[in-house]
Length: 204
Image 1: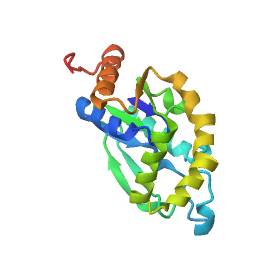
Image 2: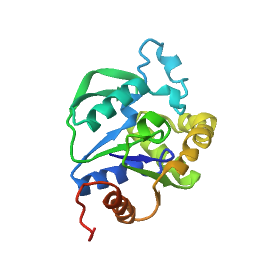
Image 3: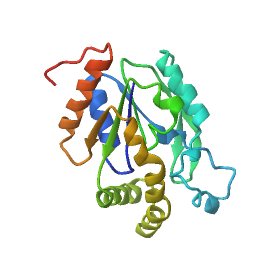
């Protein structure tokens, strides 16, 4: 089990996908575990600080990650970022030979990061992270440019400095989000070879 953390927009998910391809594993995003806000009016949901670790359902995340670690299948929740609610459907997920967990809070909760065999932190300059987040949130989450900028200034960056950046100290491997992804993959696979029983080609 590999945990990949870092600021929003640093490139965690793309890296997680490539590592999973190399190891024949699966990716699980902690974004699926945001708390269901359907009990709040829609306008109030948008005011919630999603960049605070308290916005995640940690009980469920720990329970399901531990189950996967034990080799058990789970029904992973599905989160709708447009409405800030958990959908009625769930996604069956089988344990594989490797699981890559990615998310800004992947190294925040001790009960989660202690499950990992290898921990990774992806670092990248703030201006690049903002540009990437801007493009993603407008394209995938129906956001406006103004709302993205406001949220970034009010909560994303301050909460990153408070909760995310300090978790860099918990990383076995530190990579940059603007370097070639294959270089980052190589560094992670080297750590996997040292710390786990999964056979990984030394030529990769």
